[in-house]
Length: 156
Ligand code: INI
Image (cartoon, rainbow, N blue to C red; front, side, top):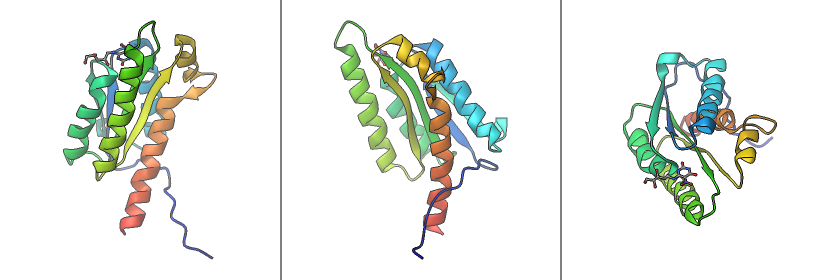
């Protein structure tokens, strides 16, 4: 039987930072609700969940980096919504936030997860923010909890 390493999903005693953008607040508010719901359902206490707001998705990576390197949190959950408009602006913001969060995650000792929607339409974003395609904030928080436990097991 091979040795299997897999994280369990639990949050009791853990501290989380949620870095969430205000741009497209209608969507990001739902992603935040989903993430908090996942954490609390798995045992996190309200006072151990720290919500950090930034103006737009472009600002998420740098602030996630501050949070990850602060030593105060077991994981950082990045939430945002980039919705395609009539200009190429979308492409730049979507590319920067995805590349930026990936870079922060690679450099960080604690898990940094990506719950940033990049969609063509507002309807697609709504579908992924608590309606028919689930809630990507909830999913990101689940990934964060799993990775915290996986890291603990790998380092034990
Ligand atoms: N920020 C978003 O979070 N989503 C978007 O869809 C978006 N668009 O399309 O412009 C957006 N722009 C703002 C950007 O993230 C920065 O806050 C701004 O450029 C200041 O640096």
